[in-house]
Picture 1: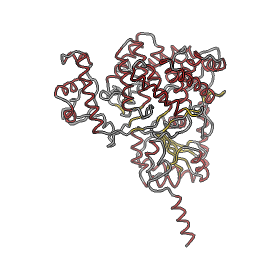
Picture 2 (picture 1 turned 45 degrees about the horizontal axis):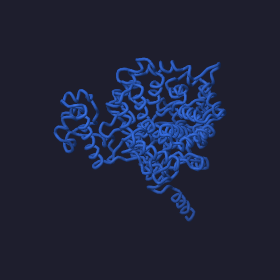
Picture 3 (picture 1 turned 60 degrees about the horizontal axis):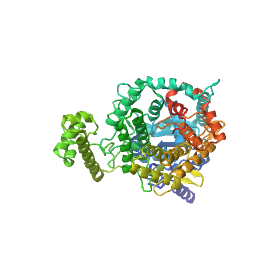
Picture 4 (picture 1 turned 120 degrees about the horizontal axis):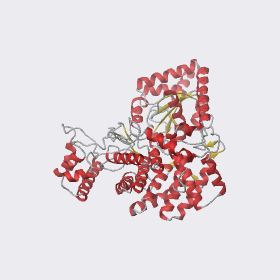
Length: 606
């Protein structure tokens, strides 16, 4: 009897406490969001993996990010469910990952999920053996389907463990062979510059020349590809496509007509209905793109978009201390996707005068639904010249009236609506913001913001010769920086120094460049992080673009700037060797290497 009581006591004490787990007080807002789940979550690390090996349990890794709508849905439906949690807690070691803090792991697991399912996305859920080999992966799944998968895998683990382990190793070996083939160096005297024309043709083959952007389904800003076209494309067709895309992104649903800034993408091919999260990287990159396009096309409107986007970042995303937070959630405080940004006729009439209502109903089509109760997203359906003519106003008077309307609605949103925020300060994305601020350093207000951001990176993120990945609102570190963090902060410092003649920024930029090459470039190729806990460390000769430009391409640009100011024979040799190493992966997929090929033509420009 006593032994039975003791056994029950041990089981109870070893079980996770209801409403608390190991991520409850994590500095990542995304992980902390799961702190009260009944699932016994662990952060990614050696301790959790060792626990799986000791207990001979499968590992369940769930990857997401704070502003991800479907991540929130799966938390409510599955990870808050006590029955699902009971199975996970009994048979798995469950690990929660913030993809923004561990992009290398996210990329590695995403490659597996895409290879085995044909699709990817977040939340991304991957099951691994105790040794770290992926077995199965999926994105969002409804509770019943997810429960079936969880139960089926644990059953198979107990009845067919050898088969599962062998299959997992086989798949990993196949993916490793594919990576080796992609990394094969092409023979002969070659340079990345020779692929300029094939790249431009590849990009224009998938360009939507009627509506802008790429493809014919959901529309993403695709900044790496647009940058490449802007930097390398010289013919009229490319110029026309770029201006169509820039004009459409700024005037349609991707852009917040009231508060400024850009959403991450639109779910339709016409750029009308956004996925409502706002990411720091989206806005920093688009500010850069519009600033450079303003110079290329001599178009002050693009400069205004760049400047206004940076002012939005300052107003909505700048944190105390001068850095910028990661994102604004897609769902509002009432858990309504897009609720923060939508307006009905009744809501508008509470804020605007009759003449102002006429302007927004015509210019933004806010009366597009007859009932007047449907909430809709404002966007510029009538161009400003036509709108001014229709209301018999000068462009200046119209601009003033629209600015007044936007201010009223901004104040109303601020007073009556709430929007969750991911307040971590990521090194890479803040380096990106500093690059963007360098583009408009002639604006005194933005120049002051850039100076504060530079000081934050230098004093908070750069610690004793090492760059932190991120810090939270309390200044707590979230780990060591990866290649992207070093590359973007190096480029940010060097571009800021060039724009403002700041020698201290240049000094840190040089240090970051040299540290990046030392930490992340090896004879086998690039590694995106210094430490990996998965089997078979991943090295790549060249790094592709994703939603963000290739970290390798950004470091190459920063390296050119550094060498122009401080020549270094050894570093120059490393740079030249990389630029003279074309590989099979580039030849097979030009679309994903636009940033890298464009960087080969940078000639000292960042």
